[in-house]
Image (cartoon, one colour):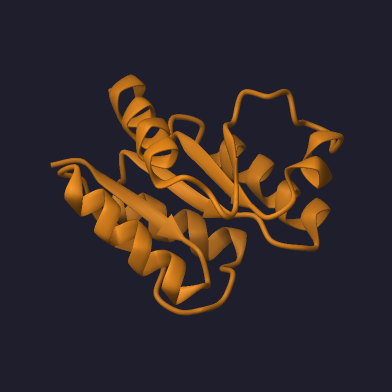
Length: 126
């Protein structure tokens, strides 16, 4: 069963995502704690867990966390990301945002999120 990594400091969001993923036959692994991990810690966690996809919260300050997403993609280019944020317009004009990484706005429609996750899992290179 494919696993999806959930990186979001909001426990309520993580619980909702876990329940939704479980409902469509996807397991989840969660960043332990309610903090935003450093890049090194995040890469180590994802390398150890080997998820099929990552749901990653992008909170303010947006430019700082966007840069972390870009660096994560450089270090783990094969790992599909789906970004979750409350302000996608803040990310739209940041350097490196070429539209290849999908972004969902919080609050999101759970069916839209599940469809995006399932697409990422299906198209992940093996």
